[in-house]
Length: 226
Image (cartoon, rainbow, N blue to C red; front, side, top):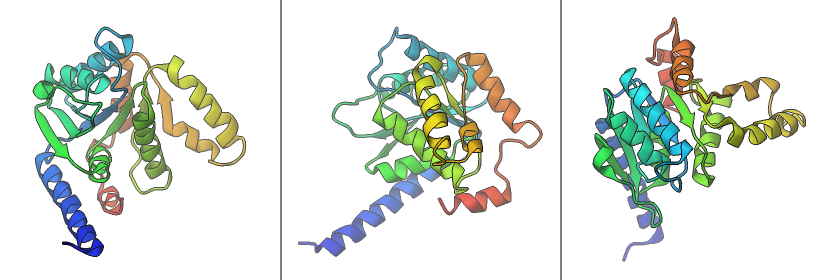
C-alpha cells in the first residue's frame, strides 16, 4: 500500500504527464481561441447557434478553436470549428453529467485533472470568447481575468458574448469591485461585450494589429510562471 506521500508524488507525476502530452498534441495550433459556455444549452437555442457561428467564423479566419469538449455550447463550438478551415480542439474531462460528442473534435485530448486542463486553455489562447454559462464558465473567466490582471499571463482579448446575460455582472463589477476599490478602474477594461459574430473576429484581429499573434519573448517567459 502506498503512503499518502507516495500517492501525492504519483499524482504530481500524472499531472506532469498530462501537461507533456497535451502540449505535444497542441504544438503548432496557434493562433487559437478558447471558447467557453454552458454544457446545458441544446441545439436550436440562440446561444448554441451563436457559439457555432462564431467558432465557424474564427476557424475560417485561421484560428484553431479550443473548447472544453463537453456538450452544449462546447459542442456547438467544436461543430462550428470542425466545419471550418482550422482545427477543432476538445479538452475533454470525465464528468458524470457532461458527455460530449467527439466526432466534431479534430484534436481530442483527455484530462483527469482540472489543473492541467485549465492551464492548456490559457497557455495556447490568443483570445477568450465566453458565452453564457454556469460555475465552470465563471471559473474559467475569473481564472483568465486574474492571470492577466496580475501579469502572470499576457493580455489577450476577453470577449463576453450575450450582453443581456452578462451586463448585470459587468455592472456589478463596475459598481462594487471598482467602486469599493477591490480592483482598479482600468481592470474592468479587460473584458468587452460583443454579440455580433463578425465583430468578435474583427475585435481579435484589431487587438493584434501591428504586433502579430505570436507571444513575444518576454511574454513567453512570463507564461512559464503561470
